[in-house]
Image (cartoon, rainbow, N blue to C red):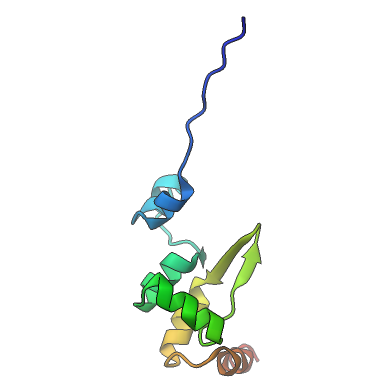
Length: 100
């Protein structure tokens, strides 16, 4: 008879909500470069529900899709706040001017 050892499971949703979870998982003290909606909302001082409404209305920076997840660049969020939170289209043109 073969015995199976169960591997520990990780609740990534609960872990994503835990402050310092990234540091605990990776051993890094650097913040992640890409953040999910809960962390993006926290960084911008709004609730996840408000963040979702801003996303649907095109009023926050555009997101990336990576492996089925929707993520925002931390640097984009910080620049978006520094530019007084313009809508997505205005922010995209600000970024393209900044990169030239």
